[in-house]
Structures are given as structure tokens and as C-alpha cells.
Image (tube, rainbow, N blue to C red; front, side, top):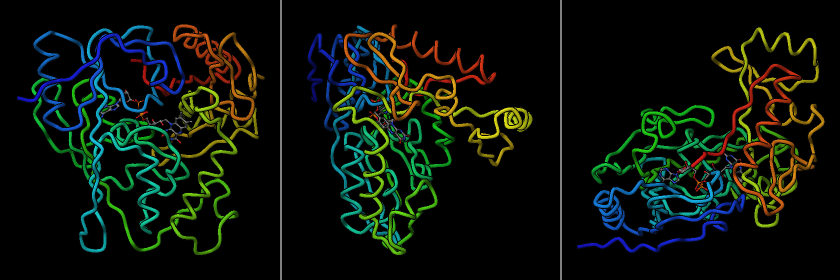
Length: 336
Ligand SMILES: Cc1cc2nc3c(=O)[nH]c(=O)nc-3n(C[C@H](O)[C@H](O)[C@H](O)COP(=O)(O)OP(=O)(O)OC[C@H]3O[C@@H](n4cnc5c(N)ncnc54)[C@H](O)[C@@H]3O)c2cc1C
């Protein structure tokens, strides 16, 4: 019988990129589906709450997590040719950026624009990671999940994942019900560069390789975003808000420079970073936390703070934006 090997009272402060102080009552790192099942059964027997943690780059951890924290550690991946495409079967514990670099080094196309997004592959579908005009949804074929309640496996097609902007079924109907155990991505050998976002096109030749695109994305990201290894942060702290066409029109007549992007459903997406910056908060410091001086969408942790203080800072920022623009901001990282 497979046993759940777990550690007790584990410090997680370096297991989340915001470096919030946090401890887990129990932590396990299942490397196979059988081990994962054993961990779930053990949690059931002891009536422990199960929490899922990947690379900790999109979570706000509390001081203490009661129950069992599971960090999926299935790190195998392989390619399966299928017609013109290659299916990449990827374990939940594979680091996302390593996967991107391994595929572009093989000359494959599909996820090059998503280079340098921190975290593990298992968490990528949760918020449908996206950057530089590409979302996971564009390349995802299917997802394998294990139900927390009974350890049963199931497959979901990309359509069944109900992807949206930073949204998926894993944040709604299936929230707290499944562990994502494997992704299947559809990659191509044929060149298909998507350079329409930011200044990627200006920085690259007319016919770049996927490796060149990924390296350029990394370069741009390093220029714009603080490295969590040097300054603790969780990337974008707020989602870009969507407003109605009418509200956008009124805002644009009052603030003609407001970056606004019309969406297929008639709503308009606004740049949260711009809104925060216009409130005079770029570079502002609030005790242990601050708004990054180059990217107002990123909140940074200078050390010594905790989750409640950070949430209070975020609420203050959101309240300022509401007063100035009448727009509500929503926090992007998940409160565990
Ligand atoms: C510097 C920086 C830049 C970033 N840039 C981007 C960006 O450009 N685009 C973007 O979309 N995001 C970005 N992010 C956010 C983050 O990298 C992604 O959301 C990433 O997918 C989170 O992965 P993770 O493994 O760290 O997940 P975690 O933070 O550990 O978990 C996130 C959520 O997923 C759940 N979860 C984790 N693993 C599983 C699993 N196997 N099954 C089910 N649920 C699970 C957790 O319970 C939690 O709710 C950035 C973050 C940072 C720090």
C-alpha cells in the first residue's frame, strides 16, 4: 500500500513568492498519482482540510494553514506526435518556465509568449495564465484531475474548463474539489509567432524562432517586473477591471489617456496599473509593503509584514481607485 509521507509544522515563508510568514500543519509532496491518492485518503481518515499549493506565486497565505497542504510533485513530461501537432503531456509539478524553455529549445511553437511566468504547470489552468497576447486556453487540449473527495481521476476538455480572463472552472464550480494532475498542450512545429502585443515585433526580426521570441519575452519582463527572488511579490496584484461600454465612454471623456480595450462581449477592459498610478500611488510605501516604483500593478513586500496587513494595503488602494474613477478593483492572487 502506498503511504502518504508528510512533514508536520512546516515553514512556508519561502514557499510563497510574497514571502508572507506562514506555517502548514502538515505538508506532503506526492510524486505519483498513487501517492496523491494516499495523501487524500489519509486526510479523509483524519478529517483534515486539504489545501493545494504549487510554486506559491499567486497565493496570499495566512499565518497558519490547518490541515494538509499538498504540493503536487509529478514532474514527468513527454511529447506525443499527432498529425501536424505534438501533444505535450505534462505533470502538475513541472515548473512552467522550464517547460516553455524546453519546448522552444526543440523549436516548438505555442507557449513561447508565456515564458518566465513563475509557478508550476498544475496551477496554470486555475487562472488561465496569460501574457503578451496569449493565454493557456489557446494551446490547452485537456486537463487530468483527481477528485479530493474520492481520489477518482477524470479528464476535462479545454471547453469544459470554462476559461476566461484569469478565470476557469477551477475557480468556480470545481474550486476546492479537484487537484489538477496533468495537462495536455497542443504545440506546433510550424512557425506561428504572435508579436502583436507590447513591443515584441520591434525587438525581433521578421521571422524569429520560438526560442528568440521566448528570450525576448524574458528580456521585456525582466525590464518591467521585479524579480520575486530579489523583491518579494506575486506579480499583478489586481485584475484589470472590466466596465460597461457606457461607463468606459464616460471615463474616457473625463480621462482621455485612460488605456481601454474593447472586449468581444461589449465590456471594456481598463488597465488597473494606470488607474493606481493616476491616484499617485506608484512607488508608495505602506509599512512592510509598497506599490512597485516601475509597475503600479505589483505590490511588493519589503519584509516583516503579514497577510492581514497586505490585504489592508490592497483595500486602501482599491478604495482610492473607487473614489477617483468609480471602478472596483479585484485582487488577483488567491486567498488560501
Ligand atoms: C513575478 C510574477 C509574474 C507573474 N506574471 C504572470 C503573468 O504574466 N500572467 C499570469 O497569468 N500570471 C502571472 N503571475 C501569477 C502566477 O505566476 C500564476 O498564476 C501561476 O500559474 C501560479 O502558479 P503557482 O504554481 O505558483 O500556483 P500557486 O500560487 O501555488 O497556486 C495558485 C492557485 O492554484 C491552486 N493550485 C495550485 N496547484 C494546483 C493544482 N495542481 N490543482 C488545482 N489547484 C492548484 C492553489 O490552491 C491556488 O488557489 C505572476 C506571478 C509573479 C510572482
